[in-house]
Image 1 (tube, rainbow, N blue to C red):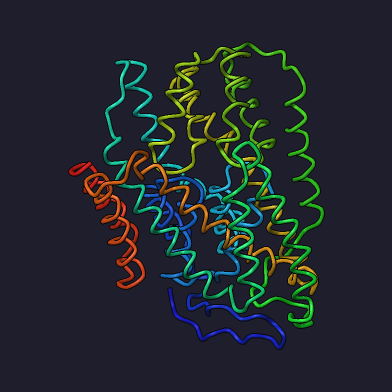
Image 2 (spheres, rainbow, N blue to C red; image 1 turned 90 degrees about the vertical axis):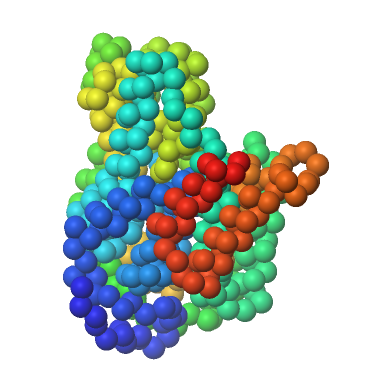
Length: 425
């Protein structure tokens, strides 16, 4: 891709790190290969995958700005569906439109899909899954370091004064102290609250301008309306009993597709909903099989909702796995792209940009807490001693130094951490 000169920033527009690559020259092959690699190492859940995306797309290739990534994360917290894949679809859309969203989202899911497909085959044919827990323990501190490095980089761009620092600290404190049974509501509540606060605090700090420093793609209100109508019809199917055979591929596909649009709050919130349907209503898997499928989804890279692959495989082998996976990820990604088009339009408003500035501060605080949540399982629950903590501490510190001081690629850090965990845990 050729380099272009640094874009001129209109008067009154907030600046960010310059885009040094021409977005129009970003090929679909580049998106596919980049997100395929990201999907192969993105262990640790939503924020871990997003942190890897930010490191590669924003920090290394400078194809997006930090502010745009924060916009995508904010939208993902507001919309239903698997948040990590939704953000990837957002990035792909910003770079190459709807086709870029499709290629990026597909590529990031493929490694987890094929790995879980292999594990499902072993599980249902041999009754056991090869152990990978020791390597996974090594991933955890490395992933926490990646997330923390992203907080540092984004914070340097977003936290520019005392008001921004206070907002980020409030968001982190609320997320940390919120009881587990209410955590599903915390992100949406914080985003709404920080939008109001951002409007009050920053409305006089954003300039008047009819455009944006990162103009979006043309918006077709007719296409937006048709897309939303189709997705609304799909949601309606959730409430309508379908006269289909229990093991039919159409029922499997429509069930996962309609469920995907009522998921708010991330994959872990979805577990009891999907469990009641696939275990109790349709008996596609037993309770033990469902639990094992969720566990396998957690030890693979990518989103936990890849567990749909396991369930689909039980119903109809490879075809069932493929259709269930497509159904669980596609409708929310389409909604994300639709919302991204609307975001391009509404961000021309001075009021909206002030609100988004407040939301960005809240997102920084939430990501900071995510680093702790990811690291927590690797910390000893009993009395602290050097023998139990040194592998975790060494991986965490070494990863952080490699990321911040030496700018080492996460593609090397994650496998190295897994190998170290396999040898020393």
